Amino acid sequence: MKITVETTVNAPIASVWEAYTTPDDIVRWNAASDDWHTTRARVDLREGGEFSSRMEAKDGSTGFDFTGIYTNVVTNRLLEYTFGDRTARIDFTEGPAGVRVVVAFDAETVNSIEQQRLGWQAILDTFRRYVEDNSS
Image (cartoon, rainbow, N blue to C red; front, side, top):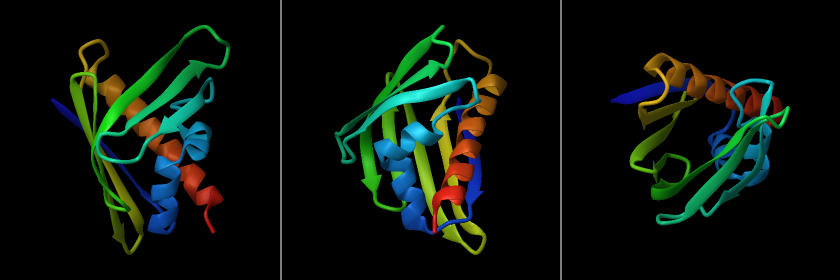
């Protein structure tokens, strides 16, 4: 089953793309809540390139690595990747209200569909706020 989350970012497409694909930016926005953070990120932004980010609870109680391989990269438009046996697609579309970012990903079996949707949406909302606060 695919889960889809989306937001519209009021910023130029180049700023949105850069923030989504640059490790220095990723560590600043990639968290679903204030008690989590991303401590490191690595991006090899090309088809066949690997990415990873380390997400941890700020109290140090738990953490995990989110890793994958890009299968399609179209600058300012599209990212597709695999992570484990799952896939994800992120579309970036310019419009009159800003850049619409749509993330569609394969559900996993541990957490409920609603938990997954809420978590990924929270991260995307944090991304939107970060970009809007930091773009010129």
